[in-house]
View 1 (spheres, helix red, strand yellow):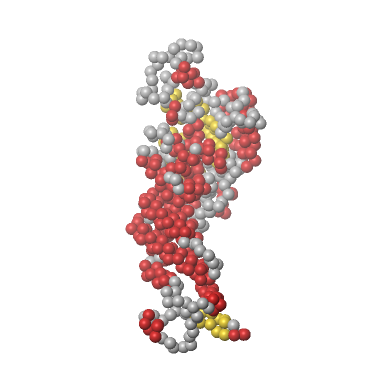
View 2 (cartoon, one colour):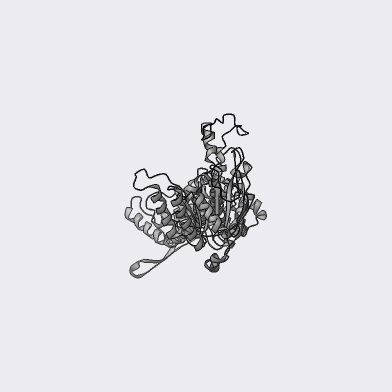
Length: 530
């Protein structure tokens, strides 16, 4: 039996080795906030969701297949939660029952396998019963096939017969078996027999055939009889153990794939409950495993968004996050400049998170979104200075970029947040310019935030044919709207606005105490990024 909920042709592999930069990517995009909400304290769900987010799909058909499955999970989240809970409870109960000495003896193996199979039969019945009311409303291929399997393979006549046979294998009337005498009067050809159905009185009075009774303290006889019983049970022990193992593998696989769907449903509920929009993105890219390598190099990147926001930020705010529109189809470079704390870094994280969610086959935080599947997503964000003083900030930045350069490939996405700002503007601009152009020439998509005007102006002048240039919006009174709009770089980041807000006067010394506050009376910073 196969699950095939998250892949059309295989089961989910949670043992896949994640890329070495996955930890930095998760930290830079704030994925822990999303994972905490998806898991709600369940570490198994957290681990499954993390693996799926950080090992994205590249084939468009696979993305669309998973999107349809996730959409079904959002239609009936309580049903998928019930399935998960039933499986977890059953597996935990079966695991707890695995105790005692002599677990490798055939009679112990049979007893253990029968106990497990009885528990699993109850779980399979729950799967069929819980999915029956919603089966006709499911639309995805993955969910429809799985629920159909529950209905047809685990129907009541079948499970009833299984449970009846398992009850017989508890041997309530003792173990009845036949054998032949082989060479040296050694027993051979041991075979279990099914006892005739008869009452206890009939069994007590039945003395047909040769029989004997062991003396009460005949330890040698008891041991010999035990060896005969084990030989009779050896074959059925193997069959029952294999059957219980097979069903357990199926249930564990189903549990792990359901964990991802439950995590997605929880995240969706958390966002939509506070009024945030979500959508399943329109996806373009390579189709079919045989075409991925060739198609990846020629598919033009697509990135169009309406109302795109950072879900991790939204989950930490009481109000809704500010969404932004983006039109960057065909662009290899997106350069974001403008006012300090105007939402530039927030948009950068929004783009990165949306790309991961798209390639995971999940919904994205936007009212509308269209994007292309790609390869890996890399981040080059600022880090705290080395406390052990082994290297300076610039050296640390250069070393991290070298690691990225060694691994990045055409079609990958690089998110750069104030790269090389640790040195002066001239040197930082030149370093970033050379690095960004090398990536663009390789076919890597680059989304960068910078306050280096030398860098921004030169890229705007020379890379407009393959780039989109955005600027953080600023009101005339210095207020930040946290909206990003198309615009050429400006030679200022309006740092004086922050100075006035903090010190109550502008850098020249004139007071601004009478400047009007924000409309809601709050500091405008919570929405912002750099």
